[in-house]
Length: 92
Image (cartoon, rainbow, N blue to C red; front, side, top):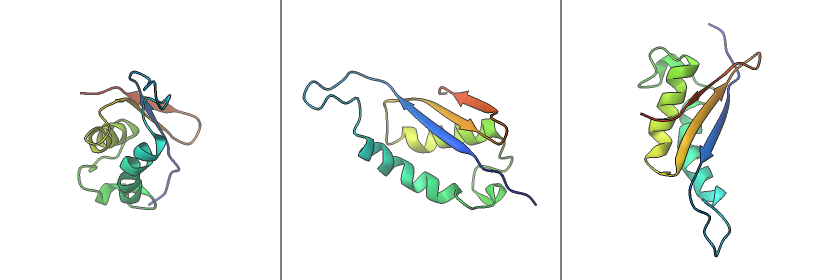
């Protein structure tokens, strides 16, 4: 067993609200991300339901499905790993 450090970038797109100047309040994005982060951080990813083969690609898809339910403005999930390699998933 060995571990990896992954980075995750969530990208949203949409019209900028003229009153707030935001597409999405980052606090709302953080709230949507928090349970996903909790399910993955310092965990054996093979034991996370839905991640039997936790490649960067499948991790990006898993994160997309978990976050998109709460953030319809989500347009991309990027997962980077050791060495600067990364994948980007843009939806089903």
